[in-house]
Length: 85
Image (cartoon, rainbow, N blue to C red):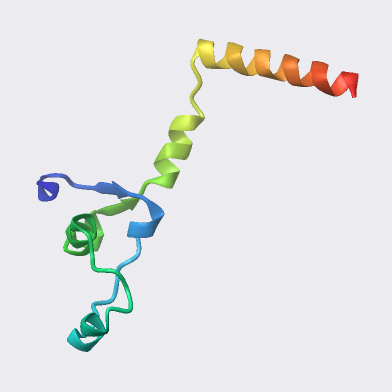
C-alpha cells in the first residue's frame, strides 16, 4: 500500500536507513526483533521517505482565531501570575 504514494512521512527514528545485520547478530539477539513497522520502513525506498518534523512545524505556524484567543488568555493568566510574585 505504501508504494502507491510518492512520499511517506516518517518520524525521525525512521528517516535513517538501518544497516542489515548478519545472521550471527540476529542469533546473538543483542537488539529486540524488528516490528512489522520496522520491516515496512526498511523495505520502503529511501527516495520515498520524508522527515515528518518539518511538515508538523509548518502546520504549527498556522493558527486559527480560536487558538490565537486561547494563547492570549494564557499569556494574560501568566502575566498576572508573574506580576504577583
